[in-house]
Length: 328
Ligand code: FAD
Image (cartoon, rainbow, N blue to C red; front, side):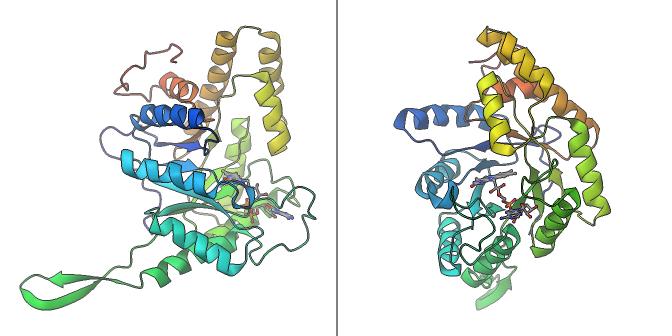
């Protein structure tokens, strides 16, 4: 397990950045995503993660995006996987399938039960992300118990290599608490359990105030969590998307941004508002010690690259990015 290594070479932005993508549903969306990936890859991110639809609904499409990253970029692909509703055998097969495709970094998630299901009822064999983290390590070990290499100068000789392990086994963290959590301490306990199970990176749910993230990290450290906790930041450039995110995450949208986006009719001006808000937030968490920035892209490059530009992190600037202007 290599852990999250902040030493990324000459051209990687400091702090390192990473991006989240989701699998497209149409051919047109796939083409647009391909173009966005090209632009995002120029920033040399630490990794790009690809979401996984509830209950495995996007498995094939997620794999297609991950394979595209492997075959057409130098970016480390990270597969989100969910386990709720899976039997041990199904989860085992799923992890094996992604490892076989060449993916070695994962974001292990419990996932949400299907709408209408009793969220407290046990569904499937795996009940938490921590169990999936353990399973990922176990499958990897069973799949390749050890590697062998020849010994120079010794015909027929071989030596056992260190077992190839998943690069990153990341997990989710909730600065404002998971909607079903019993309290913020409970979220820290769950995060610690995931680290003990073998995760080496946490990525946070969206949050809107730097103090929410920084306070959570402080509580997590006091609770014994040592792995890096990457803040998840999304530039939100439309009032409808902001309202939808509030619905999805249960985290109340920031009043200041909600009002500003609602009263601003011009799309370009809304874009600037969303980028400004996200850039300020990112700047504050980095100043507070965040080990990197994980940017939710919504499969578009313009807003996230504009955020990085505001932060002075596009050096050298990728082709076609004009400084401090909207890119499209
Ligand atoms: P766990 O780590 O197992 O639990 C985390 C917290 O949720 C704990 O506080 C735990 O007690 C509480 N919790 C979870 N379920 C229950 C329950 N039934 N009863 C009581 N408490 C509960 N979902 C997807 O489907 N696909 C994705 O690709 C995806 N990507 C994500 C990426 C990030 C960075 C984040 C933050 C979330 C993502 N999710 C995704 C959402 C995630 O699956 C849900 O939030 C899910 O409810 C909890 O998953 P977990 O891995 O955090 O669960």
